[in-house]
Image 1 (cartoon, rainbow over the protein chains, first blue to last red):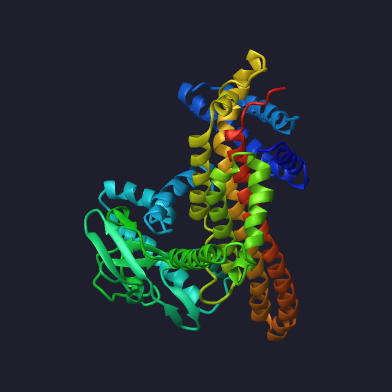
Image 2: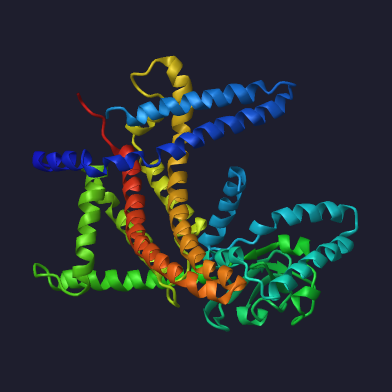
Amino acid sequence: MTPDEKETVKKVRSGYNSYLRFTGLGFTMIGIILVFCFAGYWLDGLIAWKYPVLTIALSMLGIAGSMVYLFKETGRK
Amino acid sequence: MSIPNLLRTASLLIGSLLFGAANAQHEGHDHATHEHTDQVENGVVKVVAADTEAPELAKEEAEHGGKFDAGKLIMGHIGDEHGWHLWGHTTLPLPIIIYNTERGVSCFSSSHFDHGHKTYGGYMLHEGDIVATKAEDGTDIHHATIDEPLTKATWDISITKNVLSLFISLAILLFVFISVAKAYTRRAGQAPTGFQNLVEPIILFVRDDVAKSAIGPKYMTFMPYLLTAFFFIFLNNLLGLVPFFPGGANLTGNIAVTLVLALITFIIVTVKGNKHYWHHILAMPGVPGWVLFILTPVEILGMFLKPFVLMIRLFANITAGHIIALSFFSLIFVFGETNAGAGYGVSVMSLAFTVFMTMLELLVAFIQAYVFTFLSAMYIGSAVEEPHHH
């Protein structure tokens, strides 16, 4: 690729369609939280404690994870 | 539909789709099946079957009583069918292909089912799905009982409406692109003619605005897939908007179809992913260890969730468009049932809104094909990207 072509690629990348990258972000974040919640629920079923400590802990972790993911994806590339 | 249920259904659907049918047998029946298997253990299967038949019969009769059911109409239109309804009482019969682990393979025309009213070859239609029965051929379905164990052993790989629509769109795509490719070799260096004029700007758009901008220098490797995905989705979105025969099937609004498309993107990303990509997923460089503890699971989840979102987005957008247009039409009949005048009055509004929605859907048909292709290209781009040297 010539430097000229490289410049074109860079220009388009930062152009009007860069926002499309973020269109799936919300669903991915929800997905992350849900997977963590289900994992916690499932593990709680396995250990069978009276108090669903893992469901709560892992759903919190899922929210934190989705936040980390959000920052990572929207951060400067 | 819960996520585990959706995933299970989707995994069943992909198997049947890969073998040429977009119709899975077990989808709608699981609920009923569980209840029935419980009863079989108690040895009272016949009584239960007779019991569930009675309310079914009442429901069917209520439907035949002429009451308009908008939900049923809409779901019938966006779903798949064994047979392609053309107009009035005319239906194009389609081949039924069934594999049953006990009975073997059966092939016959869907016209034997008599629009879903009769049994044939030991099978019948129950709410659009093929179920096994022990009743003789030609029995009215209200007098035939579903044989649950045999139904569980049934795999429906029929050429349904969606599958036929898939074949038609493939024929159109092959015809257009083979003739265009021939024109390019025959008329090298000359101005484009005919179909060339139609597809050249779109191909250039996919190359310059999608592949080059999202993948970068290695874009040429992925152009065949991106162009195929784009034109396949675009053509089928448009065909879905045509209300009569070659169109009208809701192919890109079928989750099995979008699942296969998303799966291909996932496979390309996973297979073509370089060291840089995997390093970023498994251990993001320049991140403290305690953050990796949460970031790595999240990245691994993201790897699967990105194609999952791709699948849901196309499915949901196209299906939603069809539901809205059909809902406007249904309003005419809902109002018409209370008062004929109200029906005529509402029809003016309904028609105007439907025309407006169809215009919007034309735009959505293009946008969704573009978004799917662009996001696929973004994922591929992230997988083949070379490390930056700052």
